Length: 115
Image: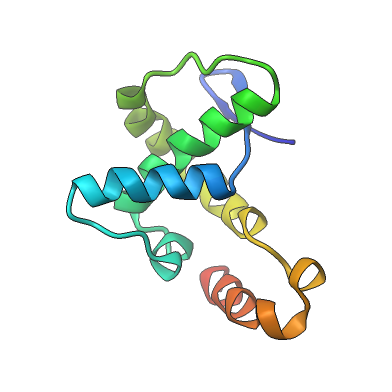
């Protein structure tokens, strides 16, 4: 499992269904909607809740409790933004997992986001 370091502590992090679902639920309360292209482009409005729920999922899978509060993630994102954005392509299925035709749109977005 990947980790992301903030204030000299390595936090386990895992993107996936849980993180995307809860990010979407939080964004809907704010009148926003989740958009994969905006995520891959590094849209801060989407990245903050995605980071939080990815940290929650990582902690759960590691058998730990996330010690950061939701409002602290805003400050964490400011410190780890570049590292987190670099991790985003790993949060989504690859051609190997889906088969080339099903993964093509995701692969194109990943390529655009890393240019």
